[in-house]
Length: 417
Ligand SMILES: Cc1ncc(COP(=O)(O)O)c(C=O)c1O
Image (cartoon, rainbow, N blue to C red; front, side, top):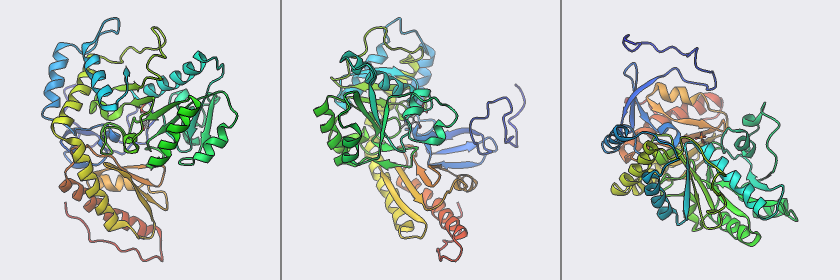
């Protein structure tokens, strides 16, 4: 193709299957926490490819490392040893305190592996029809098994029959899970996100996680924590469950682990590390040298540059500013989350803010209809966080003002970027 980049982007890509509701924007390149579209418009990136671009865009150390790897070996089969798999696995074991790792390429694949582990764990104990406890509002992916584990009727609609063997319970209610599993000998695992992402940024309480750990120990169940979105430093710890002081038996990872290069991993503790034997599981792309190098370099840079401390500092700064400007405002239900995984719940569906924010030069997400989700690169500075607030707050104020006639919602003066 020799034609110059189009000046006006078509709002449709007729040959691409129409599975996403997209904004009429095509991004062309990025630098740090900024991205530019093909028409040259600049955006502040508070979405990070939905919690993927840990190190932002065009990172000065990550890019040369990936270029070096591409020139050496992008992919080879798992017929052979891949030394970078061992390097990354050893690092993940060190950071998690767990024992070994299976590599794949996406979040749903990591969760599929976790669900297979839960089933085989049961079968190895003589349980013929293993069941897994899952949660309301959960999101674990869009394969048939992971959408069955997902607690969202919209994700499941049209794809029945769902995979059986799930027991669904509400969040943060220890009595509810005890009741739902009472007398059931088929339960083999409990599976949840430490902070639900797609479901609307709903954290599991630290005490609840400790209570579940205890319950799993007492009943010999696997505790499986989906850290696909909330893991890899996002909340200010390597893994979000670490705030509670517990360790899971199985921990799926993906998204931020490769800073944009597709990668997934299932990190297992002693109870789960030996369940899979040769031939029980595998995937062509899993653990390929390019993805492994991305994971190794992402973690190395995070450690060298103290990115986790930055996630705490910038996250607290961002949250404080949002609370200062939005708390108490009619129509703002709640601001929640940890580190750089924050949700602002409004009292009404606010999907239109996605486009309005983009028009103002800010990339965000709206999930669970009413929750504005901020999951920016973990390199975001406090000054950039201030810019996020300066764009977002007036939009929210105006939105609530327009949608709630008769209520006096203050509107800030317009922003000049
Ligand atoms: C917690 C969680 N688990 C699993 C997934 C699925 O990951 P993927 O889209 O890479 O399949 C997601 C994606 O948003 C997620 O947030």
